[in-house]
Length: 601
Image (cartoon, rainbow, N blue to C red):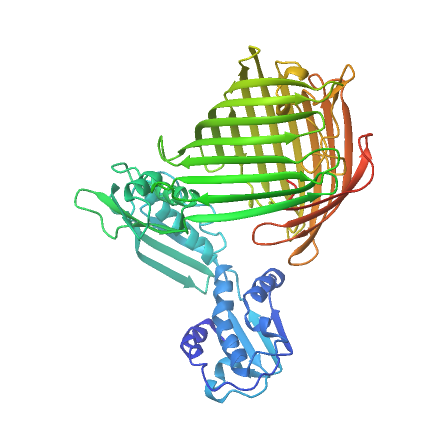
């Protein structure tokens, strides 16, 4: 059947609402394509056919099958047009009868087989092509030139790019005023002629807020950051919506342009938001056969003062039932206020109480940090803060326990780059975070600093991309005080779920003349291969290695572990179960079990 007849039958498709007949499974659908491009076209046509999806479906009635067949005419022709074929012939036979000619009110009660035959005809090429006027000096794309394959999608994309170029130049109301497309079948040429009306160059006007939000309108406008009075930019509109979504206060955000431009050349904007529930609670757990059980919970308020401020309380009890160590406790508070020094800068203040009972020390600590976080781009962000910390420490590495106090003033800085496709379960992209914390200890008048780097990379393998190869590199170094005088949490250890699975938690340290403490430098390397075995179940094979040195990456010790894991996908991230054992080093023996939510890295 020809494309013209197909178009005429589109109205008939809507009439397939006759009395439903009994269910009868469609046994077979054959699709054949003639011509030299049969393989590539065949794959695209099979994907577009709804009829093929009804094979062996016992719930599909005869009416369903006929409706799918009649709809397939238009769907298949659209695929052929998209690939540059305009002299097409499509035939769909239902038990030997052309589907388009079957009376929808007298459909057969049983349908067994269908045959789809496609003759794409000659490949058309572009003839005369024109889109005018164009913004700037950028020419038409090479794929939209005379003699290039006349794919309909290419013509649509070239037209869309021309409109977007005008919008990027400040012409928000650029539009197509006329388009003429002529298929010359005798020469297999497609002529395309498009007229564009750029409209006036406009600037951002008044921003209004709609919706019943508990956040003040002035704060919503400030967070969005639309630059009133500046030349219109569609990227600025998209970024405004992204900023509002990122604060986490709103469940729905829409930024809409006014239909018309004001007499003075301004384009007013409307922001429509819907609030999330203001409060939320949550929790988690993680288990290791050596480290014991870790319980955590939080309480969150999304709009504490009416300006989309977030206030969060976190608590954690760790190492419950752990081997060779006591139970740790922590309680922390964090306040965030977005858009304090411009729309991309966030103010934060956080405080915490920590009790750490480790084999070599007991630490009771209070800390407070305030600062700003800045988003430099969609992927790059940085933090700058000022911190205060007071700690009371009982050292246990000597025969007689000794106590000391520390008071630190610090200037923590960090830079984060993240282009992962999914932070909870990444399959592509890179995550990199560098931290530097210079400090001054007031009681002993000593200075120092800690630097760390966490680099992660993810790559999807295979045609489907379901198998993922993940790698991680961790580096850390402490300069300044000797290990015995350093803050305990500024020293480095290796072993456990965050560094080397299969080795006991913090089991690798450094030897300082018979005294074993955390190292002044650390390197960790991890590799993991994740592959699916079903829609929700996945397996993982991994290997980790860690290195600890009392100096600057010299004369140290290392150990390694490896194992297998199972992943079960949930809306909040994969549930992870890992079983690992040591493969190098003398810090552990036996098998370690790890259970948690989220990938290991």
